Length: 285
Length: 208
Image (cartoon, rainbow over all chains, first blue to last red; front, side, top):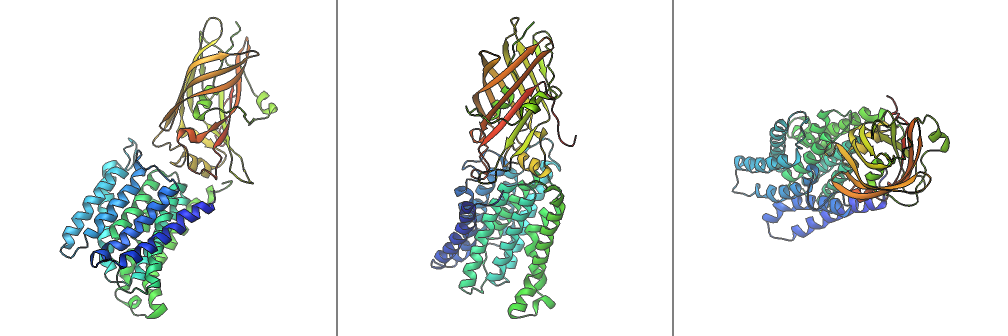
């Protein structure tokens, strides 16, 4: 089932443009608050634009996966609060853990035959998202905004690819809107040559990526390994490998390539493995 | 005893809703082949995949419809008839997780939240409320069908044939999936789904 012109317009172009415009608008507002919220709100605004304009789900959530946009919005609002100057890392983690636990409560289904158990999912997902968000915020301080946003966009794009390959086209479209928004943030950073960090969107990104992959995984009837669903959102943490050692030494394009090398390799490998897992089942579809 | 009975089309017609101009999904040769009357025990007819077939055909919008056939492999049903041999009621319950198509990837996609969302809604059901019999074995069955979270009243046309060995029934009609909240893919996948129900023809699931 190919993407139509409407899918591309409202699911990709509009989120990109919306995120780009919002980044510009926030740049005109008072710092430091605007700097903390810009990326987070831009990411989720584009995601919500694609979700609701394409009618990928209802406004009022009734099924577990229909909570994804609402929880992403909550993460976009709360995430920047954790980056306020007077919030310690421990307090930031607890704040993120509250949001991620709330997300898990709504996103993990209550099916009797859920395996592993709902309790396992609740604990695992909560810790996974909170730690991922916390670590991403730490990394955001250390990287050029262009590099950081490019890697997050690529991670969301890979998540969309995995979801589509697993047979969940709706969830793939949702994540594609998120990836397009992140790309809009990247475009803004590139056009403005922003070398300064882009903080505040670790929790929004983690909720968007891990949330869509969670609902995609539990609803999937595919051969794709659960490890791939786990690896895709945390691949951006591979940027840490370039903080020291040979990958940190280069400058210019070579330096950029060195910094994004590990997350890029991880994401490409994940997509290729997902494709190989499913290629035998594509006959006639 | 001749027993005019209306069946199984109710089951499947209930899924979506009925439109007047239906599209035959099976040729006359296919219908005539392998159809065996189903016996009536007392006043009841027990319907199972061993004696009933429920199939559907979905298509894509545009120049290449690429029709895809599928059906359900597990369901239970009962029809009640009175002493005059007329249908009094019919009820069905479908296991939506038994959905099958010719292609594994398509089967997985139809089972996903994009369409049948079988993990959240593992059952679909139909319960007739009235039967309006016509001539030459034709009738219209009215009933409530529940699919996903929507319950709607639907009417379906059926044609029955009765013999001392039992009954056979055929029904072909179109359904609008979006009436039951199955709205994903509008503009890419046709809203209308062609359905075919045959009592007297066992379900044949590919690969089983």
